[in-house]
Length: 309
Ligand code: BDR
Ligand code: CA
Image 1 (tube, rainbow, N blue to C red):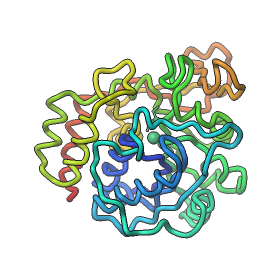
Image 2 (cartoon, protein in one colour):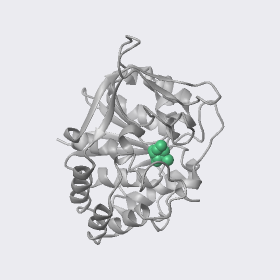
Image 3 (cartoon, helix red, strand yellow):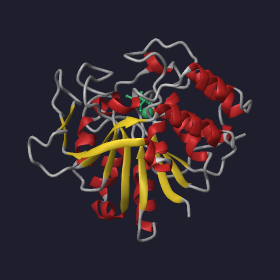
Image 4 (cartoon, protein in one colour):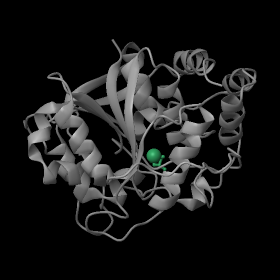
C-alpha cells in the first residue's frame, strides 16, 4: 500500500523536482496534500509554484494549502539570488488557474494527522520548518501520529547561506528547534549528503531524453545559470533526497545522533551541531544521513520521472 505523506515546501527548483518525483510514484507514495511556506521566495509565490508543478504533473487533484508568511521570530530572508525572481527560474511553466485549498497549512497538517489511520503519516518538510512547528505548538496531540519527519535541512560541516548554517534552518531556527525537540522520529538530509546529489551531464541528458513536459521543465531548472552556486559543480538536488529516501533507503547511509539548533542571532544562527561521535551522551533526536549513491539515485529518479506527462 502507498505510504501517506504530506510535502511542506517552498518551491524552489529542487522542491519542484522532489514534488514531481513524489507524484511519479502514486503506487508507493500517497501525497495527501502539499503545504507551502515562505522560504526561497515569499509564500504567495511558493504557493503559486506548487500549483504550477501539480498542473505540470497532471495532478490538479492535489490540494495545496498556503502557510506561514514568515518565520516564527526573525524577519523573512529569501533566496531569489539562487532561485530567480519567481522561485522557479528555468522551468518556464504557466501560472495555474487553480486557487489554493481553503485553510492554513498548519491547520491542514493537524487535520490530516488527526484523521490519519493508527500508523499515522509521514511529513516531508523541504523548506523552513515554520508550518510544522506551528502545527506541533497548536496541537501537540498530533505528535504520536507523525510516523516520521523526513526533512531537508542543516549541515554537519559548512553551511550554504552563512558559513555556519544551511538555508532552511537559518531562515527559521526557532521552528527547527521545536521540530527537533518534538519527539517524533526525524530523518535529516543535510548538506553533507545533498551536496553529493549533483547530476552529471549524462544524468541531465538522460532526463532530457524522456521528452515529456515534466522532463523539459526539470532539464531547464537543472541547467539554468547558477549565480548562487556554492561548493558543487552543478545544482545539488537537496530536496529530492527526502523523497528518494522514502523510495530507496538502501541508497543512503546515516547514524542516529543528537542534533542541537542554534537559535540566537549572530554568526552561528541556524547552525546544526551534530554529535556524530556521541561526545555529549545525549539521547539521539534524529537519524542523520551522510552518504548517497548519487549515480543510482539519478538512474532511479529518471525511471520514475518517465511516468509523468
Ligand atoms: C535548501 O534551501 C533551499 O534553497 C532549497 O530548496 C533546499 O530546500 C538547501 O539549503
Ligand atoms: Ca526547499
